[in-house]
Image (tube, rainbow, N blue to C red; front, side, top):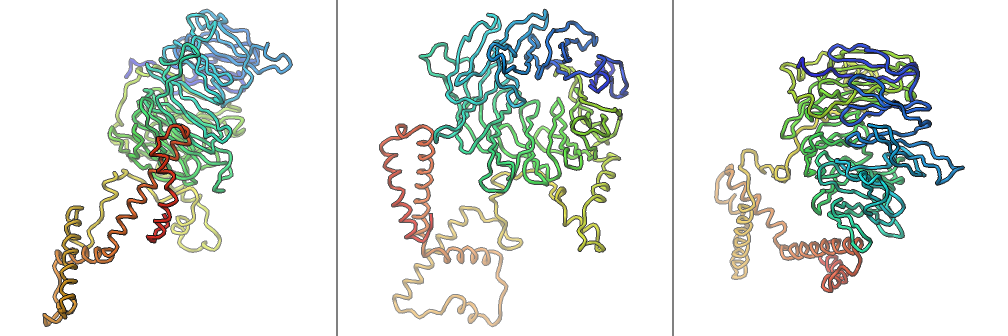
Length: 622
């Protein structure tokens, strides 16, 4: 590991922008820029850095940390690089007095500093940035205007849109990674029509107005104010976090959220089964094979899902609102910052999705990021979120504090990115998992800081604190059971073997034949005693029944309880099946219109009232 290049940390403070090297040994390497800078942005591979000042934007190469050129542009609100760092995108504050003639969005060529493209961008905000999206190969630059998404060719100098995606009411979009790029677009609700999310392959975008755009997947929804897209690294799936300003259940002041999973290559969409309540954070693994979600009211639950949206592992409940994967996709951190205590839980994820807790530390912070090597994390307390105790700390993946640097006023601290294949994936070192010295103090601090109500003071401190906690939970999670394991019933009698579906069906058939024979005997005038009386009279003492007799008796009792209405229950099931089919047809009609239904399907919709009346006649509310 000695031949690997050292990692760097950039710290932007009120005095200067400084460079730190390490770990394992963290130290100040020098001052990059004197004075305070407005922001710092890096290219994806970490080769270029842009430091924004009041009147200039300085391009710096991270290999030598030397300034290459300075762009004469000030009052910058947002800055970013294209995927291959060929272009630099800057956005200034729009000038209302000038209007559309104010070209506040610019695209610069990094190698020469030449201004390649500029136009007016009216809305400038964190939610709408980046205003220009790129595919992975920088073959197209995409920009959204009213009711249309335009695609520009950088080779042609961005002179005009080479293809357009007409979407009336489009409110947001994003481009997938991968060789075969796709557009995920969100169209807001309008005139009673539901909001929709559509996925369009870039290669099939129409070149003229006569060609209809091809859509590979679609999802409709109501009560949506906006959607946030999170693609996986391969572009095969996207998570759509929809949010609404109003919660109809009145359980949250901040509205409601729903998370949807959409396949990028097929017509497959599903609601992700997360905990009810706010969704705090969603993060895909860098490999794109798993994603983690922390959701719910405090203590929030963290769940791990595979690439097919199936829950794999439950990471338990706790005071958490942030998830971070290391660049190799092996370790992940679950933390709680802001108004939460600052607990950081380290996990080691296996290839099959099982996770093992490494350790827990307590470090109140504002930001947290993994190092490019995937063995350390960087936490920072920054202004203006907090004006006191500004500092950054470096921890190992097993919770050991490596470095602590304090500042009078720290605005930002982040790692200098590195190429994805520069640092190899390494398993945890022997003896590091579950044995950190910092895990015990964190647990003791959490226990000591737990609030105990006055009427419970003086009793057992440990039990009373455990019963009254809004942030901590005894739920430790674990491997999520499959549907077959959840549906499997325990034996009715201790020691009895599991009775499968076939055995239950045969037992019902035998019980039905026995009841028919008993009815025939009563019709012929036979005065037979009840079966339970015959058993007691035929023996001088009570005998303990065998396991087989007990299990058969339980099956016969269950059949006798509902055997008289077996035909009615079967009819109820059939009627409910028809109602489910009608609900599917209603959803199809709402999304595609009445003309998309056949004559037979419309007739089935018309019979809904009679089906529900028949269900009520059978004693079921439907």
